[in-house]
Image (cartoon, rainbow, N blue to C red; front, side, top):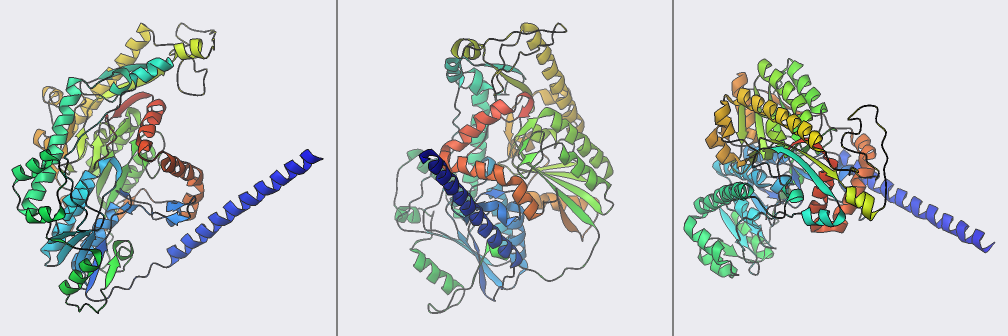
Length: 597
């Protein structure tokens, strides 16, 4: 009887907790629906557009407010879409009600390091300044390097007196797991082409190869050089002085930074608001009109007239695999490109690529549609933070490739990665396997006795040769696509391929990129090639209905958020190991997941 009551009470408590959770989700759902229905924003004359880049920036963020609710805290942390940021800044340039922009900056977060994203926003702000309007920047918590790089576009930069700037330059740290795998009794089976194709190094080595060290040093120097040049030009500080300060790596006061020209003033936030009021011609007692970027992107501007001509902007964002989602690229993207190709009202296509690569097969499927599209209408590629390996594969057929100087691209190479764990399975766990074949190689690669992708035996020499030939064929196909798209000879391409990663600036110098610029530049080039002046932008893939997207992604989103919350800064390393075991097979992927300070 006691057990019965205990289990009954436990069941009742469990049901109550489930209903409380469902009620919380329901309240969040209703709140999000209410937010969706009330997008009206009133912009007054003499207003400041306030830009805070507090949350993650994607090339194109979902407009589904339900997606960003953290059901652990019941708070919303909406991601920002670069497309909406650029559009809002462009609209503010023409909006007579907007007097200036107030950058409230600390750090800038985005996928794959966000350097190219930061460059694109900076260029949009430069165009805003050309209209005669002002930009002031302030940080109450201190600028990160990326935050300060963006802030230097401002007419004046201010900072809290107790938050000095720390310039440290750029670095890349790679973790190696070979000894860990050895202790577990797991062996990485690797076949690859390209001496710079170093994505497999963490699993087969204990240190960086000289080739990998060379390419990493090259693109870090190039990216840092871009940042330093921009700071130097904007603040009239010699490049040598910036690098000397960085090399000394010391904590200086904000007053010293002000004296050296890095800041225009060291003030508290209330004083900053008074400065903004004075700039807007207001008295200290008057209210400062502010409109947040997240609100301004919903402002309706005057109707510009109707035209049926469209430029399709197709977003290819995330790893290339077998399934399409908001942050992953699958074969379905080929159908999206085909749809734009067959639409008579679409006069040109801009393919926005922000991907480290992935499946070579999916890359080939998408390449086919890009090649057909190029034969039908102008196809322009705009590269984001990363468009490398498979990301370059799906780009190379374009008429014109546009990249930011800090974009990471190239990495033209292919590898195969598998894991075997004979020692783990047989000796450490004690599992034995027997095999019966119908043909000589029916057990190719071994079996998988554990619920993880680790085979029961290593590859035989014959099997390894078969896979190496397969990788070689894939590499030759990749090279042929690039040669045809870029007009390069085999010898010219060999000198710059081999899996080597390049920055957009270096890729432009060697012919892998045509124009240095961003998404807006790519759209202008597309319009020019299509011979149209008036057009609408049509964005693809079509976003899911918010309610449908919420329920279809609920489990995965909650799980991912919980993992990120628990692991914190260790989440990227966990994700890398997870991808390594999941993405087995023939891959065209950049060696790194980038995090930039």
